[in-house]
Image (tube, rainbow, N blue to C red; front, side, top):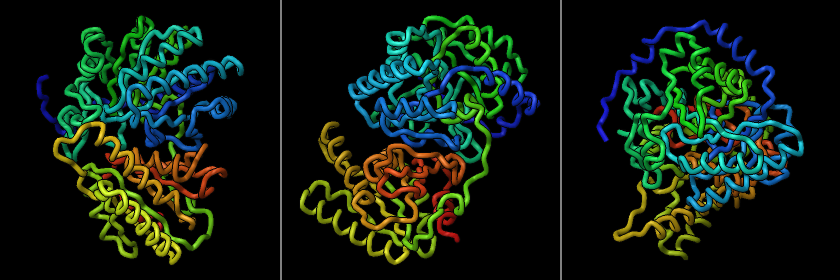
Length: 478
């Protein structure tokens, strides 16, 4: 695969602007009479990075899906956390979800669309998940899926697609995604930055890059909505459509054409990052959250920040957080996972320190070892087993608390999923909004271990060096 050059981020401002009010009006008109409920299957808890006042369900039981369909909102989320699954687990879960959605939709007489929300840096079980969803749709809903929309745009995280190449922004530069640390992911690594080539690579050649339909920025900025609609109308046999985007209005324009094609009988499955969902649902903008909007009770206990992510961005953010006065750091020696007795003693010791400090009104930051444990002649199975054991221990540092923290922050996708579902025992949460761009906040449900507290889900790959510090400062400043 050929190496691509990075580009100046100045190119993002070089495209012609559009009449934003006009485009917004077109989108609202297009969506007004659309009869579909939109169900977002989120492969980790960070996919709510762009929405607010939306429900997230942490299981895919009949009861939860039924409740989601009965809501007045057009959109609801189901957290699958499938990025932490094996392929076998992913197949099983998506088959079950597909069947249950079809059953509930038929009972309640709903049409629906399914969005597979995944990582804006292209990691995840692709094309496995959307392939399974297509099969379930066609088996249980008698729907024929004409095409699949691929759009990993996520402005808040600096992820842009132009000329079909997906980029990650680092300062003043756009770096092709295939040249970043994310492409070296041990489980979901890839080589291609050109999304047409990425689809061919990930499908092992089943879908050829030459067969992938693309929607260019030039088409979008020229408001060629009729032409884009015509392209979508010609898609068959689960053909792939790549949407270029560097701004929310690119997605709004595309969604106008999309809804027009859907109104004429076309059906699509979606594989997107968080940015697309906001525009698909015409969800309004909302200012960043204040402390007063998140912390509604007057408890005098401290908050807790748990850091599990090992990305370099997270490590840099942790170093900046250490400059914030009035908080206490505790290092959880996760390397002791190799010695069972000492590992359990370490968990108990950290837990006691947390509780003592929280009860004194002190906010605590708990970090795993910042250097990943690696062993010579290690097997994937052993490494996974250790990782699961450490993750279970980390979530227990919240789940075993007998003092209610005034807030919880989790850094990292797997960490935030485990803490939300296992430690906090959330079944349904309301998305309050974002505390900083791309960093969502749940309000925990009444059934959870700590009801009605703010739970900040901080992705490992989002934010600048000071962002974690800024988040904690906002939560602490009364």
